[in-house]
Structures are given as C-alpha cells and as structure tokens.
Length: 142
Image (cartoon, rainbow, N blue to C red):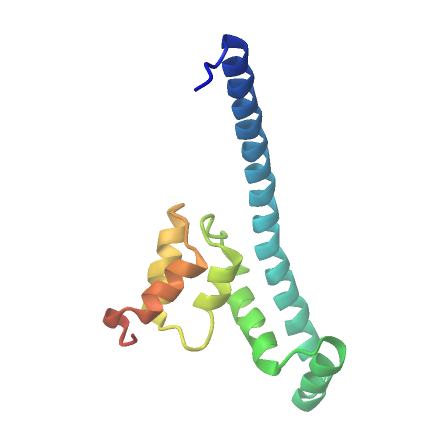
C-alpha cells in the first residue's frame, strides 16, 4: 500500500473543492432554466388561448395538428395551467413536469390544491411526488 504524500492529499482536496464549486454553479444555472420552463409553458398557454379565440374549434384543432403535431388535449392542458397559475404568484417549488401532471384532467382537485399549497410554501413539488400521490391508495388509485 502506497502512502499518500501531503501534496497528493492537498491536490485531491483542491479537486474536490473545484468539483463542488462547479456543481453549485450548475445547480444555480439549472434552477434558472427550470423556472424559465414554467414561464414558457404559461406563455404558451396564453398564446394558445388567444389563438383559440380567433378561429372555430375545428380550425383551432387542425391548426394545432398542422403546426405542432399537438392534440387539442395538449393545448387545453397548457391553457388550463395558465388560467390557474398565470394570474397569481408562481409556486416557487413547483417543477414544470409536476405542474403539467397536476393540471392533467385525471388529477383530483383536492390533490392539486394540496400540492400547490405545498409549493407556495416553498417546498419542492416534483413530478415523482405527484405520481406517488396519484398512485397512493388514499387517492383511490394503486
């Protein structure tokens, strides 16, 4: 077994600090991107709502399919999300994927409100949290 020199231990410690600093930097940058994702979803919902008001329902559905390959259900989900979150303070702890899952038509209203309250208190709400709650026996699933 080879003995580690003092210089080797210092280099290893320095590398560890550099890695920690880089990970902290990446975490900060990813949080900004995650927040921007939710804002982009809300902006898309506003634009879809405006577009929906310009044309007949059949035209709107055809436009969605032709332009984006989206279904009407996708557009309605984004519009619903925007209607619920677009006029109030954004829950700081709400992940974008969790937000979409909460506003999906199959999510019970009580669960949605519980998870939104949690997110508004600054607690993190992830897609996995929502999925776990949806499949728990308390919610009649699973």
